[in-house]
Length: 445
Ligand SMILES: Nc1ncnc2c1ncn2[C@@H]1O[C@H](COP(=O)(O)OP(=O)(O)OP(=O)(O)O)[C@@H](O)[C@H]1O
Ligand SMILES: [Mg+2]
Image (cartoon, protein in one colour):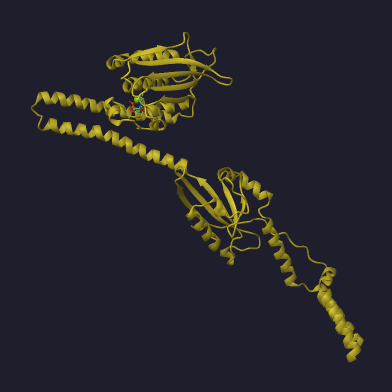
């Protein structure tokens, strides 16, 4: 990829014109030689002294007034060399420090000349004077750097680093031409310096992957019940046309599958609705204790089915928090429902709301504890990912979509809350959520 090369905008410092006296001083040895030659010509060869004098005057005039290109070019070259030696100056350094991405400036030999603040933070031990390859090791980046040095064309390359975690990077490598140097388009001249600006693209790539994974997972989850529905419809139209008993059985399975599709679509819609308003914090004040009581009551038939009793411990008075009632019901419902569905080996599910008062934080903590099989530690970090299930079959058997905890996480983000999970395999699980308390004086809506 070829882009216009970076060149220093600043024009070279104009050199003051040398005075005739300075020029005479610079040509002193030549003039001295001319003087001796004139004296020798007068004394030894009888050259008329007026001729020798005229010769000396002419020499002085040439030395003092005729501009000499070589000298001015030398002065200019020295000035350029000095600029290159000193570059980058303070102005350029503070500008590079203000950039949000790690930037390196190296000379044509690959020696680091400046490392901006972001690069110092991201690449330990990097310092000017060291070869750039000490800090940047990606072979494709170093190859691109060499190409930019030899062609003067800027390049953009990307690469992945696998250790310690998978990270995507993109680097923009641009040539820098100092004043007086010419870009290749203007007629050759190799870059004096090279700027390497590095961007971490991991977050963008992760979001992209999540989006595509989400579409793939959602279609997959919908395709299974849909295939089952189509199969039963064909059976009902064909072999089971005159079998009322089989028809009854198939219709009840079809109702189940349709219910699964409905739940999935409801959850996907709910997730996207919550995502849309993720940055807007709820304004109304609600009674969190009443929400928990209401949810526990609503889940008591499921608890009875599972042969588990829900033990609820709540403060006496109302518990004020800023929140959306329906969304907080959704959070509480999913946590208690999960405890019932996946922890039903135990006989109890403990639901407790407690106040946490810290120096700078006043929060309410809801903890939902079950005494079931628990969750192996390797699954804990991924529980809130969409469609993530520890055991897909048991979740499906419990009519789970794998979206419940993803919804919980999004709702909590909007409420400035946090989710913590403590669990060990065989020891049950405790899901804790913390939400900021509201002022006592605020009326519950
Ligand atoms: N209390 C728990 N004990 C053991 N495993 C749990 C518990 N809570 C959640 N899990 C595991 O985490 C997974 C994700 O839970 P999540 O609530 O997101 O989905 P789900 O319950 O399968 O479906 P949905 O909530 O949409 O009905 C579950 O499938 C289950 O494997
Ligand atoms: Mg769930």
